[in-house]
Length: 108
Length: 114
Image 1 (cartoon, each protein chain N blue to C red):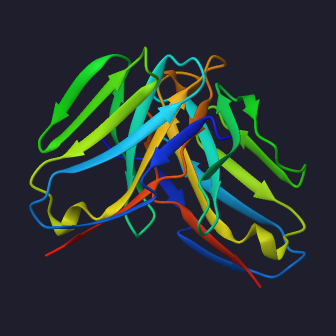
Image 2 (cartoon, one colour):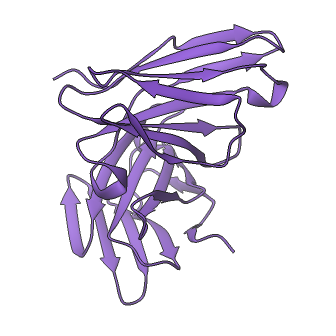
């Protein structure tokens, strides 16, 4: 079993829908990261959080340390949100442990 | 503030050759990490350099090596290339060591081995 599990693996939705991507982890962490990778390959850091909730524009990230679970939400989704969303955690040895990613497609 | 710059963006090499990839981190960042991403795979950690010293290493053969210069720029070298080395190689820079800081990624170098 992977230490960081993301679900779903693939998600297709219509423009305007509310999107939720989940991340569960099985190790002790000091931080959790959400990143976005567009088809061109570049990766952008969206959030780094260790507790509670963060919001940036239409993106919201939450984390529940007790349940070892985080969610990334996208409100009013748009085709430009189509990308792979990656969850990573900072483990006890300070190395990043990566999830496999969730491929999101938003149809107009 | 300039972002993380990786060169070259694309590279085609022949089996058996060697290749050197370059990564210039964000100014002031001392940590540079390298990752390999193959189609359908997640990011595989190669190594991390901080203040010119390799601090962490992933499970890759000795053909993969790297170094970091005093200006924090880093190079990654792969010798005796194999077809399976075809991948997107990404580097990330951070202010501090390990995953404790926010990581900023470059656009990657897409290596094709033929």
